Length: 225
Image (cartoon, rainbow, N blue to C red; front, side):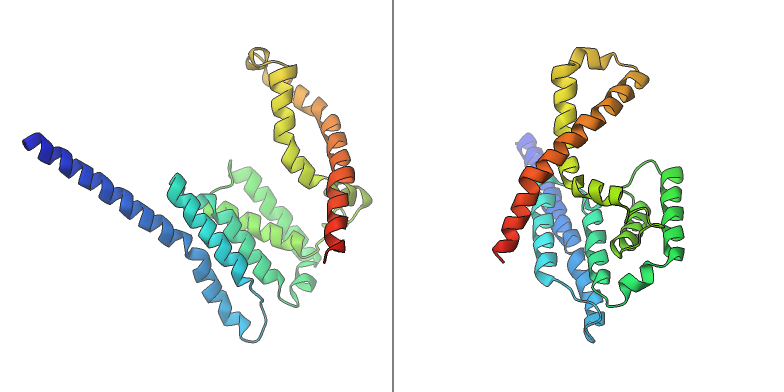
């Protein structure tokens, strides 16, 4: 009888902790809405436009994922940074301000600090730095003309395909071409040599996917508007 009481108490405690964790996760995921309420102060004079539906959708999705996977808030803070940047970008004078060369220098300094002092990108200070650099780039800052060059524009067209396909490409390369057993014995130099050699065929594939998949679909979506 005593064992049953202990087991029941343990079960009740576990259920309580789980419930409190779920409630806390949902509460934390509501932070984007708090950000919206703060930013709403600036919408009185229509200085900043906020897509409330997008923020609510993000919050709802974040709450569900956090409850199901018991995820930490740090997994969603980059998206929160993106929402804030998008809100700031809606300001009328934002682009003109951040296109100035002094912000190019600031962005380069921030990138240097991030690379030199941090070995990850999930801590709050790292996400703040990334968001600030993203804000400067999204405002149209060309980084002394580098981002507005023909090469950068061409490369920018395939970045989404590159983002989607590089993991699949490397998986196929190391599983079926190099072989898992062989891959386990590779030195650092051999590994990076293989990765370097794979860049050109990967870029070629991404160019094909952009030309024959992305571009036609984007053109099709425009005709439907």
